[in-house]
Image (cartoon, rainbow, N blue to C red; front, side, top):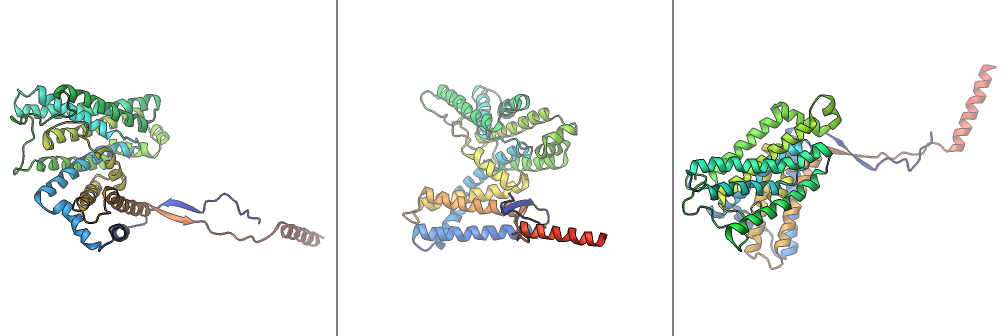
Length: 389
């Protein structure tokens, strides 16, 4: 048989795997994390040109040096985890929502409106109204691109991305009119604290942490054990299969983005009413985009997002602290970001090797030439003729 060297087969191809148990998955992650640690130590030694091991201590001090830094790290983890969980249902059905930043801003906008113009109301009522308004604003902001996707099959990535800039301009316009020439609001109801979430033990981050953890568990139940969660998985696998089984795809897209946007609005409410008590165009920070990384690393599993969001916040805070203490003159913001990038890449590789395995193309040797094949065929015909005689 003739084999063509350029037969079009890829040299390497990926195949989904389901043959790893829990311990094997843990082993793969441990190898990749260990590799990341070794690479970061090598980079620290090269960039800093000094003993890299004391730098590890500064990384931990970025989050655990004192109560203030620990509280800041906890705040960032709460916000990042909340946004990641909010993105989970949309990403489960492969709706690429990159508009979390705008949805958070609109939620913060709705919360601020109620807190500012309803400051004469009882605080508990303002909290309820601001929560509902924040989720309403976020849900509407998520519904708009979903409606266009469901009706006219628009590109949700570009649509939700552009919605971010519209939200930024709306918040910028509102804060400009609320406070004159400045681009951000000062503390809202700072003297009366109307609409502020209550603190627990004098710590303002405890209640938001409880809310986000409850949200994480609820989202896990929703995605794994409800009919709507199953529909999202089917839609994510194949739109045609979803339609064939009777799932209303258009309605599912809009419903899911309402939920996703409303939960992003909830994070905006937590930011304004529970943590920062002010609004600006920077309210959402970079959580909307960083949460995409967390969601992918966790394979859209809300419980796994707790670990990955904590890890990313720890690395980011540690890198900032490493730069601030002046560990090495050559170690600046960019080199610290490279360290975080290396760590994230290694984690992503661990998840890749857990979900897929690589198959190499087996080299095929030519067993015969054309002339050889012709001779063999002729010989077979002659022998066949002799037997027939």
